[in-house]
Length: 134
Image (cartoon, rainbow, N blue to C red; front, top):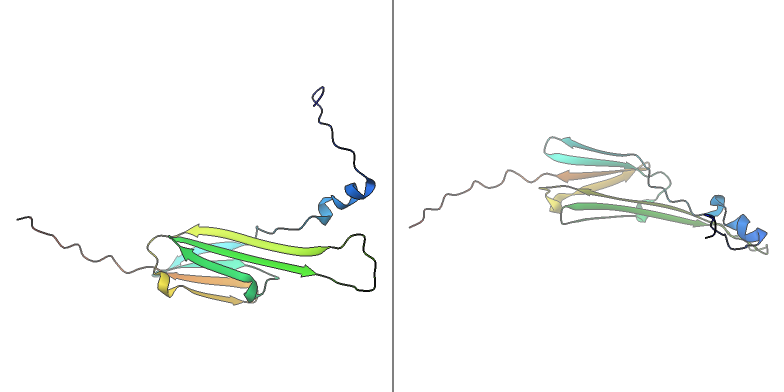
Protein backbone atom coordinates (compact mmCIF):
# COMPACT_ATOMS: atom_id res chain seq x y z
CA UNK A 1 0.00 0.00 0.00
CA UNK A 2 1.46 3.29 -1.09
CA UNK A 3 -0.20 6.69 -0.89
CA UNK A 4 -3.37 5.04 0.42
CA UNK A 5 -3.77 2.91 -2.70
CA UNK A 6 -3.91 -0.85 -2.76
CA UNK A 7 -2.04 -2.37 -5.65
CA UNK A 8 -3.86 -5.11 -7.44
CA UNK A 9 -1.66 -7.87 -8.82
CA UNK A 10 -1.46 -7.88 -12.57
CA UNK A 11 -3.80 -10.34 -14.18
CA UNK A 12 -4.58 -11.41 -17.67
CA UNK A 13 -7.73 -10.51 -19.56
CA UNK A 14 -8.99 -14.07 -19.03
CA UNK A 15 -8.48 -13.80 -15.24
CA UNK A 16 -10.53 -10.59 -15.18
CA UNK A 17 -13.20 -12.19 -17.36
CA UNK A 18 -13.63 -15.36 -15.27
CA UNK A 19 -13.44 -13.57 -11.90
CA UNK A 20 -16.47 -11.51 -12.84
CA UNK A 21 -19.45 -11.97 -10.44
CA UNK A 22 -21.41 -13.52 -13.30
CA UNK A 23 -19.24 -16.64 -13.08
CA UNK A 24 -19.21 -17.00 -9.30
CA UNK A 25 -21.45 -19.70 -7.82
CA UNK A 26 -24.78 -18.41 -6.60
CA UNK A 27 -25.63 -19.04 -2.99
CA UNK A 28 -29.27 -18.42 -2.25
CA UNK A 29 -30.03 -17.77 1.37
CA UNK A 30 -32.88 -15.34 0.96
CA UNK A 31 -35.66 -17.88 0.47
CA UNK A 32 -38.91 -16.94 2.15
CA UNK A 33 -39.19 -18.43 5.62
CA UNK A 34 -42.22 -18.23 7.91
CA UNK A 35 -42.43 -19.46 11.50
CA UNK A 36 -45.73 -19.40 13.35
CA UNK A 37 -47.48 -21.07 16.28
CA UNK A 38 -50.67 -23.01 15.68
CA UNK A 39 -52.45 -24.63 18.64
CA UNK A 40 -49.81 -26.80 20.35
CA UNK A 41 -47.18 -26.76 17.59
CA UNK A 42 -44.79 -24.52 15.74
CA UNK A 43 -44.84 -24.53 11.95
CA UNK A 44 -41.89 -23.58 9.75
CA UNK A 45 -42.49 -23.00 6.05
CA UNK A 46 -39.58 -22.43 3.67
CA UNK A 47 -39.78 -21.76 -0.07
CA UNK A 48 -37.13 -23.88 -1.78
CA UNK A 49 -37.89 -23.65 -5.50
CA UNK A 50 -35.59 -25.67 -7.73
CA UNK A 51 -34.60 -28.12 -5.00
CA UNK A 52 -35.53 -31.80 -4.86
CA UNK A 53 -36.62 -33.59 -1.70
CA UNK A 54 -33.38 -35.64 -1.77
CA UNK A 55 -31.30 -32.44 -1.63
CA UNK A 56 -32.78 -31.29 1.69
CA UNK A 57 -31.20 -32.30 5.01
CA UNK A 58 -32.69 -31.45 8.38
CA UNK A 59 -31.71 -32.12 11.95
CA UNK A 60 -32.92 -31.15 15.42
CA UNK A 61 -30.27 -31.13 18.11
CA UNK A 62 -30.05 -29.24 21.41
CA UNK A 63 -33.22 -27.21 20.65
CA UNK A 64 -31.81 -26.15 17.27
CA UNK A 65 -33.58 -26.93 14.00
CA UNK A 66 -31.12 -26.93 11.09
CA UNK A 67 -32.34 -26.91 7.50
CA UNK A 68 -29.82 -27.32 4.67
CA UNK A 69 -30.46 -27.68 0.96
CA UNK A 70 -27.85 -27.89 -1.78
CA UNK A 71 -28.31 -28.29 -5.52
CA UNK A 72 -25.52 -28.54 -8.09
CA UNK A 73 -26.15 -28.75 -11.78
CA UNK A 74 -23.51 -29.35 -14.41
CA UNK A 75 -24.19 -29.03 -18.10
CA UNK A 76 -22.05 -31.22 -20.33
CA UNK A 77 -21.53 -30.99 -24.05
CA UNK A 78 -18.92 -33.55 -25.02
CA UNK A 79 -18.21 -32.23 -28.50
CA UNK A 80 -16.55 -28.96 -27.44
CA UNK A 81 -13.12 -27.89 -26.25
CA UNK A 82 -13.69 -25.93 -23.08
CA UNK A 83 -11.76 -22.91 -21.95
CA UNK A 84 -14.26 -22.39 -19.15
CA UNK A 85 -17.00 -24.68 -17.87
CA UNK A 86 -19.79 -23.49 -15.62
CA UNK A 87 -21.71 -25.27 -12.90
CA UNK A 88 -24.81 -23.93 -11.25
CA UNK A 89 -25.02 -24.22 -7.48
CA UNK A 90 -27.77 -23.20 -5.10
CA UNK A 91 -27.48 -23.45 -1.35
CA UNK A 92 -29.75 -22.73 1.60
CA UNK A 93 -28.90 -23.02 5.29
CA UNK A 94 -30.95 -21.79 8.20
CA UNK A 95 -30.97 -22.54 11.93
CA UNK A 96 -33.83 -21.74 14.28
CA UNK A 97 -33.84 -22.28 18.05
CA UNK A 98 -36.98 -23.67 19.70
CA UNK A 99 -37.71 -24.56 23.32
CA UNK A 100 -39.87 -27.34 24.71
CA UNK A 101 -40.20 -29.37 21.47
CA UNK A 102 -41.34 -32.99 21.30
CA UNK A 103 -38.46 -33.90 18.97
CA UNK A 104 -39.63 -37.50 18.49
CA UNK A 105 -42.78 -36.34 16.64
CA UNK A 106 -41.35 -33.66 14.34
CA UNK A 107 -42.88 -33.99 10.87
CA UNK A 108 -41.79 -32.53 7.54
CA UNK A 109 -43.28 -32.47 4.04
CA UNK A 110 -41.91 -31.05 0.80
CA UNK A 111 -44.51 -30.26 -1.85
CA UNK A 112 -44.36 -27.97 -4.88
CA UNK A 113 -41.15 -26.28 -3.74
CA UNK A 114 -42.32 -25.56 -0.18
CA UNK A 115 -40.89 -27.31 2.86
CA UNK A 116 -43.29 -27.47 5.82
CA UNK A 117 -41.92 -28.58 9.19
CA UNK A 118 -44.27 -29.18 12.13
CA UNK A 119 -42.69 -29.14 15.59
CA UNK A 120 -45.09 -30.28 18.34
CA UNK A 121 -44.75 -28.51 21.65
CA UNK A 122 -44.30 -30.80 24.65
CA UNK A 123 -47.26 -31.01 26.99
CA UNK A 124 -47.33 -29.05 30.18
CA UNK A 125 -44.45 -29.98 32.42
CA UNK A 126 -45.30 -32.44 35.10
CA UNK A 127 -46.78 -31.08 38.27
CA UNK A 128 -44.02 -30.36 40.72
CA UNK A 129 -44.37 -32.59 43.74
CA UNK A 130 -43.58 -30.95 46.99
CA UNK A 131 -41.07 -32.94 49.01
CA UNK A 132 -41.17 -32.62 52.73
CA UNK A 133 -37.82 -32.40 54.44
CA UNK A 134 -37.67 -34.61 57.54
